[in-house]
Image (cartoon, rainbow, N blue to C red; front, side, top):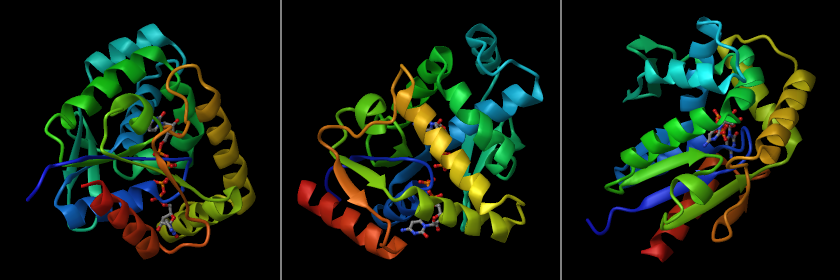
Length: 223
Ligand code: CDP
Ligand code: CDP
């Protein structure tokens, strides 16, 4: 069995983090935690309840009544807010366009970081996000920073949205992704930045399987 590691996978939007993190977790029989889904779930709840997205006090109150849970199925990881299935709703463009504002608020980051750290207490976890290697799990044994060109990332998201029947143009997606990267990288608290001890992987011309293989090699070397 060996030691149960903490594996942090960070990077900008649509770099392939959740796809490869899920596969690595499956190969190792580890828990998978999609922290982006948690920020998306809070954004969804704030929009539902008409809470102002940059009102830290109101968001804190909203958070005190929110329970975000995950349920893995054979094909995906379902996300629930107070028992309601929000898996599809949190991926809609409206959420993508607003999530960075919510994710920049202190109360939101504090509450979600604590929940994420509790999930990782016993190791055996692959967690993906923006600040996992720097803030949430600074002692993680393996840290990966996934990148890819904005064009490639927009194209990946475009194909995914087309398959789901979400109507959005490639040009709009490219703009949204670039703006979100900018906001995430420039916020004051836990910005998107590569941890000093993270291994950077450019996935622009790599397949999902190639990225998974590279990460599994890094994990083997770290043991
Ligand atoms: O899947 P995609 O790359 O589009 O984004 P995501 O991982 O679902 O994250 C959505 C948003 O949540 C990001 O753009 C960040 O604003 C925020 N986020 C964050 O601030 N910190 C994290 N650890 C994860 C996500
Ligand atoms: O979690 P993140 O936003 O970083 O990205 P993702 O949701 O895992 O990946 C976005 C899309 O890119 C998915 O449809 C993946 O299947 C695809 N992808 C790809 O085509 N090639 C890769 N090397 C990685 C992901």
